[in-house]
Length: 336
Ligand SMILES: NC(=O)c1ccc[n+]([C@@H]2O[C@H](COP(=O)([O-])OP(=O)(O)OC[C@H]3O[C@@H](n4cnc5c(N)ncnc54)[C@H](OP(=O)(O)O)[C@@H]3O)[C@@H](O)[C@H]2O)c1
Image 1: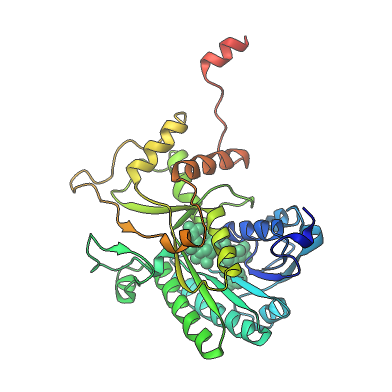
Image 2 (image 1 turned 60 degrees about the horizontal axis):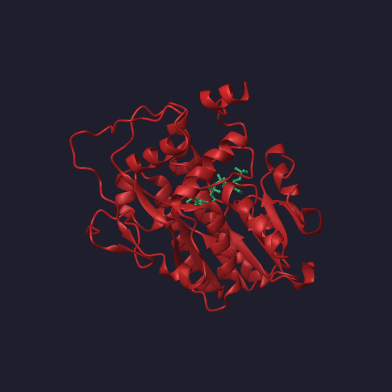
């Protein structure tokens, strides 16, 4: 299809932290939809970002810009002249010093630069960490966009990633209101799926540890999952739909860790999955209820979690992060 007939034709989006797991998928899908993309990177020459230049359409419509969250000027230069910003760059760590200040200051810098550039909309990548960390939420409450994490609880449990994401999201809303910036927020749960980048990010380690034998048991806890392509597409649908507003919970399923290892071990029986829960005393943790209706109303069809888990492992094999098992004995014999 000629580029000028695609939905993004003639429009430019700045994606912050373009080389990351989720942002790389945003760049890929934006290019496929005809957008021009400006990606900010702390180091555009780092070989770990080389995959971006190989994406279809990159040579014609992708430019990479040096940008640090703590350096306003670098962000301003990248954002000036853009129609939209997907602000996805963030530290992903539980170290309070590395997490909180860069997340908050960086977010404010992006909103101020977006105001100056008069962009049409900022789509901000927040997290489920800004939504569910609330010890007082009843077991029957449906988790949706109205829920906010309890900051004191995040602090007292030293969950600095969730704390940082929650205060960064709050700062985003406040700064955008003050500056008259149209902002919409996506709150993804744990993101899995194929990697475009060559490095491993934090959410992929969540699965990798079950495949390498480093996790000897699984925790008695639950986790919500979503496919990386769906998260990237959610940002685009929100940008393209003028009536989109507020927060969007981006989640497909909630599974107990026991379910995750069971699904994975059926697909890939050759890996040393843990078979025991680390907690044999308490009752099995129950999945919480949630609503992803807002994103489904925008037309997002979520990838089933089993497919997402399967594709994650296949990608880890293809990228050389996991040994590819030898073919089953039977097929060896048939070939011989
Ligand atoms: N993956 C998940 O499960 C998940 C779930 C919910 C929300 N999120 C959010 O989604 C976003 C992307 O996460 P991801 O999983 O794709 O992680 P990722 O692969 O680690 O990407 C994070 C990106 O942020 C950049 N960054 C970090 N600190 C920066 C700074 N001071 N200045 C400029 N760039 C900086 C990193 O750049 P460098 O390469 O230079 O370090 C990297 O490109 C984050 O906002 C995260 O909180 C992720």
